[in-house]
Length: 311
Image 1: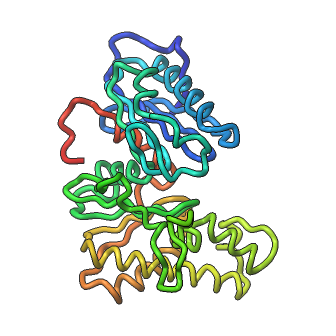
Image 2: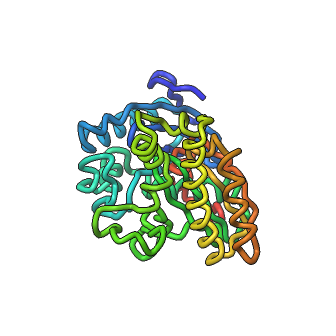
């Protein structure tokens, strides 16, 4: 993989797609062949504290440069972003202030058109990549569990990712853990995500253990209290994943996101609950795209005008 300059561009090259992943800390971009093979890449800091407007505009300038540096014909553009993606705004994306006010698809089309544009939530996009090229290929249904800074799943059926009536299918971070949870999304809370996501775990470690923690430090800690905190969070997550699996009867659950790096702790915790609680326990695997799932998903979102199957 390499970045390119406009001088590299040559007429008559192969067709390609362009993907843009707008994340809370970084913006990742790539061009790829229609089968998902990466051609060139680029990366920017999001600088979220400066607002979504500057992040999107810098991303689009970088995308145009990457398009011009890649020989061939651009077939389509895919963009993955946090939150619940609608045509004229993005809801529930607090980590990038101002993103709610941006009609992302039309803005991308204005800069990168006439190539067609596909836009969706980053976890749903990652699930699409896993369904098309990765661990969920052929699984019907399948579940992609993104366990990282945030928490969500992508639900795959018939090779397609279920969006829901409002684009919010799979937002399990908003699940109530049990009947003691009284404050939910209407109160600006995400009960399960606050308890078990990477960000939530780091915050809780500071409250319970004192000091400042990263998720990696917490998982590496050998003290009894730190291990108990992690084990309780993973079991709370496992109960909810088992409930999802009982409701959907998936063939495969693929685990991705930053916390998949500690799969030796995560997968056994999930496996125990799945084996005990689910009538037909699904296969539990690590996702194929552990480090760049949303970017791969953005590439999968890019329309090509070709028959790529149900995904």
